[in-house]
Image (cartoon, rainbow, N blue to C red; front, side, top):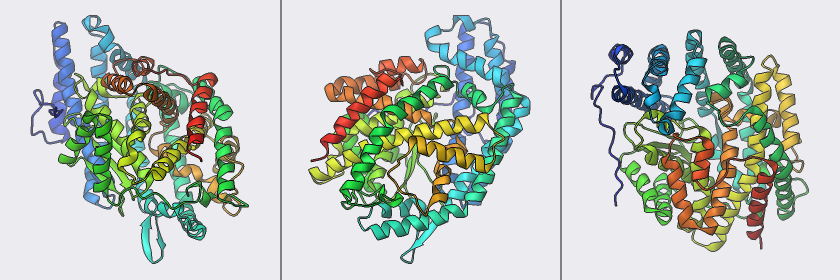
Length: 571
């Protein structure tokens, strides 16, 4: 079975629509003025609105993707900023009117409550948050947050008479020769610190703008506003604090145990920051592939062993040229899977350099891609607009359940074991980092008048709480104070980060189930992903066969499972 996904056919808007505001506005005007005389007409109105949304979101997606692939092409940047400045701000007032039209419709009560419950809840929330005076502020925020990518994309170092992007240079931190690691770490450190002040200035501006948006919407602080704006209906700030405490209590000690083991196995008097990426036993870095093309073909082979449907998703994306995988000069950092609501098959973007970490990024984004494909048949775009807690469950679970088939990337059992161990060790280091970044954001936005020095001091206190006491940062104190600047999410998507931690716990639970019953777990995974966002987070996790839970007891159980699995990888 080929599983070819048909693109959405335009029935309401012109097939050759040119994306200028004068061409787009009439569709919004017609939707607002249309008379709705029964439930059937209300559903058709929702479908027509969804078609318009799909076209606009896909056009925006392509402009964003192309600009990130080449941040130096001013024409691509110009096209993206036209959409941000001339289209998105003008859509917002219409969206508010459309939301109110749906909310006040007498036929709303006849919509299938199980199917439309989440959508209607989201609409009411959007009406509550909408403020016309926030439109220019949100536009400026969208533009200014992109400056982080442009600054980061220009960061490079010269090593051995050759220029490397920061992403490319990071592969040297896995070298067995400690002098190479130290030299490259030092070069990266000095280069990052060159932009320390400009990144602090940019962040201060973003905090100020975000705080004003919150005040305009009637909130005391941006944290409380953002929880509403992100439709966090299923948990509260207090639940996040419980997550922080659970991680501190049951994961941080295990992560510290690993650092002590690293120091012992590497036979070091002092464990320095440049010793964290090298293999824990001091072995040469894994080299699973050379090119982006090889990474893709091996990932397809891996997915094929899990489920042929998973592999076919990537094959179709390859045929449609919906992938850009290799790091290059001028390309913005990071990786993402961007849904394309009209095309059906999404776009995967990343900065592969031939390292093992690229495998996990690829299968992670592959999980997102499968999610996009499975939820594509849902009738409305709103049903496919996923919360991050749901979206990241798909990607992080794929990282773990794919491990049984990582033999396609490696030639021998020892390398496979090392790769799996690296993945599990990464989980132990990632969960405390997620808690650290999230707690940092709660502080930042509930104390928006803080100074740069206040911010640095609070960050250092968090590193003492969630970080390692084993790593010696002597001589690199400035780096430690500014480590948070490496986290793109703080600049571009505030508060979008704890979802990785919540989903990581869910992914561990799915992997635990997979170990016991692979077939059943894969089916539950696909069933959950096919729901899109038509159920609550808890119901979707339940469909996947797990719980949406970050209590101490649950975290302790999952941390213990990971700890046992890690111990199996040591002789």
